[in-house]
Image 1 (tube, rainbow, N blue to C red):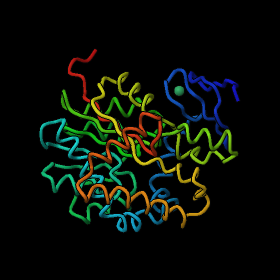
Image 2 (image 1 turned 90 degrees about the vertical axis):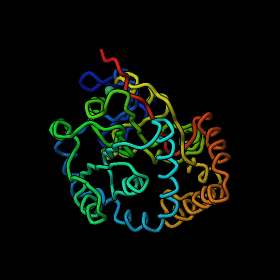
Image 3 (image 1 turned 30 degrees about the vertical axis):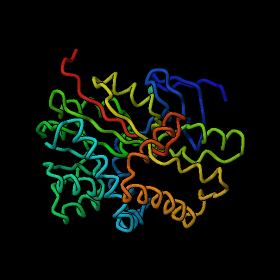
Image 4 (image 1 turned 120 degrees about the horizontal axis):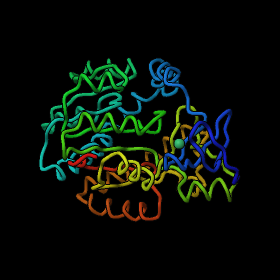
Length: 307
Ligand SMILES: [Zn+2]
């Protein structure tokens, strides 16, 4: 397990090998990713036709079912951004999916725009009256955009071949002092390690080529810092893999997965609706300290003086 491998200039200890890919703890990049890194054109095709349609056929259906919960999460995220930036402004969501966050932001007074590679998801967003363009966020796309006060990327960075290049483009479309908010799965957590190393559970989170990069709070903050951002807030979501430790093996059972998800949702809605959001944040702060949490969100400010 402690073998080192390299591909082009990327080198690091191999953590897992799945199909034709190895996950390495890359010394060059400062975060874990697969090698070989897939080709941009291959990925473009996967996301255009495949992702929401084939791999996630139930995504919109589930999101509509989760509407109240999703709205409460998006509201809390927007409230945090408004607190840091002293109000609303212009908001760009890269990989805006079905547009729920954008819709919520618009309601709160933000001027919103979305970029979404899946044609189905972009179409759905436009049908909801949102300004969403079906495109991949690349240099050409960044060049035709104005500057924004906030750029948001939810569940994007784990899928892109070169995260640093994307963050540099984000830097380009952010006004000086603007905020970037990045949400990614939190991987190689202590609970995942216990389950896979000590309890023979397969490393379910390793999912190439869809998941290219495997971040945690530290490696994401480190990457942001190297790209000209200073972290001002971070938080995690409920550590779903705790259910696996409690004997609820939802990995090969989508129905049980929905049940576990419903329990987490109920916990969050009960605390939010009863006016105890602060207590919820406190509990999740403890999870974060223990390196746990299914996803991690980092909000960082664009440095005003660039090298
Ligand atoms: Zn690397």
